[in-house]
Length: 160
Image 1: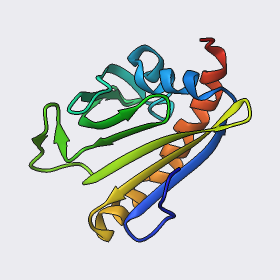
Image 2: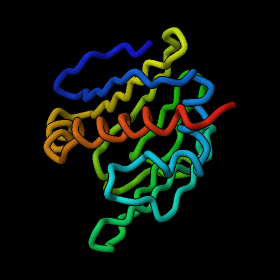
Image 3: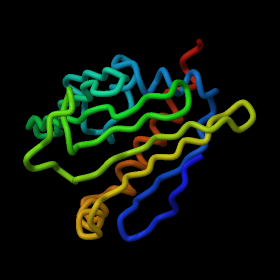
Image 4: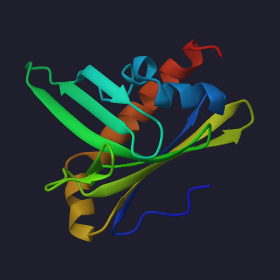
């Protein structure tokens, strides 16, 4: 279970997803499913790669409504199907450090069974309070909350 309530360095979003953890896990770790909910609409995913194993690539190319594109390269730290996915923007594929990470965070997405549903908890841990404050100021709660809501809409449409 996620261990961290919000602190000066930790941001968190939690939602109940009306699908079992195995389905939610596939929505989180398969690019064709992930691209359907990972960025807040009206932003679109133009390209996506996820390799759910330690050192694996986690890449999203976001296309903004005005057509500009924004690439995000991250790395998977750990994948525990169907329970947890850890990733970071501090490194890219193969444990290569990033000179200037976007947010300087390590994230955990925990999937906790709750009846026939899944408690989705996304936690972003930052080394410095100012990085967390900047991430929050850029819309962490609205953005990550929106994508969790999008997941809640998409996940029940898939059957495993």
